Length: 212
Image (cartoon, rainbow, N blue to C red; front, side):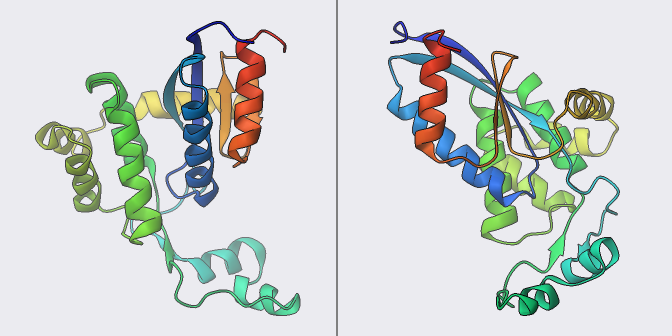
């Protein structure tokens, strides 16, 4: 059994546009709630871009997948008897500026504000299908998270934190992270994918107890 309030450092590597990252974060939070009193976890969100070459205005999903894979999801889905929801999100976006804001929130915000911003960005992207490459959308997320909107506007209007985000992206990809979410505990234990809460709970319990 882990000692009371065993500290755990968690790096949550993810992209705003990744739906499985939403699932993974929710499950991780459920697991940590179950472990309350046993572990004291600090979560920092680290950048990963699923589409780093995407332009600021984004691209139609079908068009993007046709260029990247030679087919649309509807066409491939029909081949295997699956019909994609035609009312689903129609575009994908460049998320680099969102990652810059997340880095800013971690560096200049108070504890909890980076998490609040991440959730606001997820809600805008996956809950409301908003244009994640547009600064007004990002600033709306900043307001929702209770962060300084004027400072965020300054960050977006400059190259602030661009080098840091790129450096962190290179670090994780050079260390074998090529899909997200990737949850790294205490700089050495990797939990990959949007796992169920039970899987996160068991893994974190074992790490905290020194069993792995």
